[in-house]
Length: 299
Image (cartoon, rainbow, N blue to C red; front, side, top):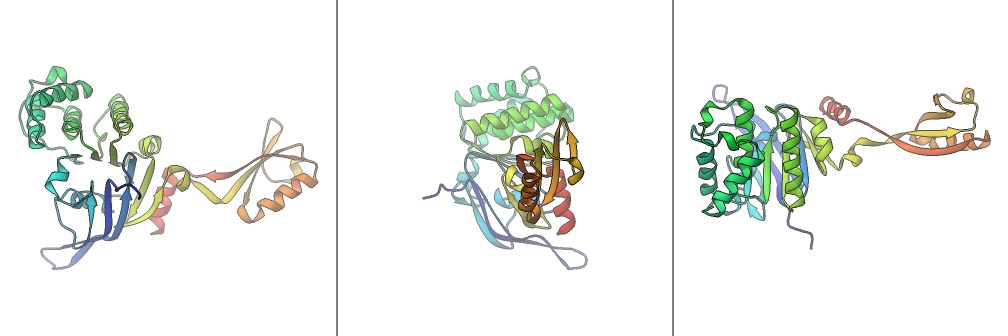
């Protein structure tokens, strides 16, 4: 049997009704997605695509208009399952309490007790580099410090599933690297990380799979390689031929010829007939930004 998904949406539709005009706005439409255990899953989409709505439905902050899903094997909103989940919202808002006591508070909400809670609190403060600020009131923190404390509260209960909505938005480059390392550590420990982010380079570096959401629907889902390698056009690298016979870029005795898929075989045969040698044939690889913009404009 296949493993139980860490997170699964099954034909979820969510409609909001406007207060003044009594009109409906559809944030999600027949939205289906499966996140496997032990992977870092990237969740991408332009503003207003429905990403935050999907996350809030999964953790039980709102209910779908139709459809449903499961999180860690339990229906969305299940209290016992939520204790195994860590969540960081896009806009971090924490109680105005001392940072150390605040982390203990969130751990207690998840059923943690000493001595494990004490050990875990100290460990998380150290990981987000807030040990020296443990006695300071979080209400006095800078935005970057507040973001790091928010990440610590999402991980305090050593969750099986971590849902992070723009976790590095307020962090400097060093902080982003540290958060990236924390996500990779979580994956090595068998945890699942669900990452919603607008930082495409970050997603491309660490995610095993990604989904791109456009207007409440999943427009594309797959591994980075599957999504970015086009099968429509190829680059043929050859040598030992007259460059005038082919349109391509020359460098160090090699020529790189870009052809559509339907002309790939004919171009290779032409190179052979001209006495040349084919060194490589590779599909053209888009950037994640190219794919993102293409889908946003197409749908």
